[in-house]
Length: 281
Image 1 (spheres, rainbow, N blue to C red):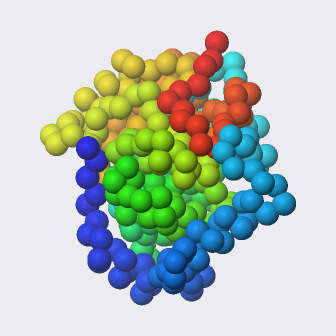
Image 2: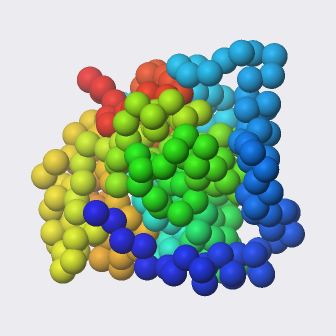
């Protein structure tokens, strides 16, 4: 369904060669595989020590800022998969320009990251996004179909991105968006965070889709509590977002990230559960 425009080996080379030293160290941890990987072992130790908690724990939103989320408005979450790609800079500029004009109703989004796309330049985009209040999510290391992998490999795909993003936002775990939306009981069993699906797919990933088509697909399907799937790989997507933000604002909507949607509506997320939307009104 979704296509990645960054070649695996070149992206990994750039990341290892140019990423900040702390991130290089985190990335190196994925290479030390002797039986159970160091990443898996560290994650299991961190999240089970002293608690015994596994699935269905409440996802903490204690650090999520909802001070400028207006629950009198209709809330809708925007999400971007396959990040950080080179179109992320344009997308961030669109949000920043909108927010400057509408400080009473700032827009945010959740950016789901593939570790394989992180290099020196794209990492700076993630820093910028986090600094602007965007939520960073986990889209796995290499965008593989997790249903086809053994449990150990599924954990490595997830944990490597969590460790990488932790250098940015300090969070040990991040909301999970599985590649292609493909999951089964085996995949769910390995998830240590809520799994975020979607209720609106504007099909920006389809070849030949136009800015107008992306815009119309979101507009006609918009609903309070919806989660919109988009991709950080296509210029037309950023252009459609530029059209959507002011139009949604005029229609009484506020665009937020997933954790803001959960916290503002008082509907807790649970680890190991799949969410396509939230109820509002």
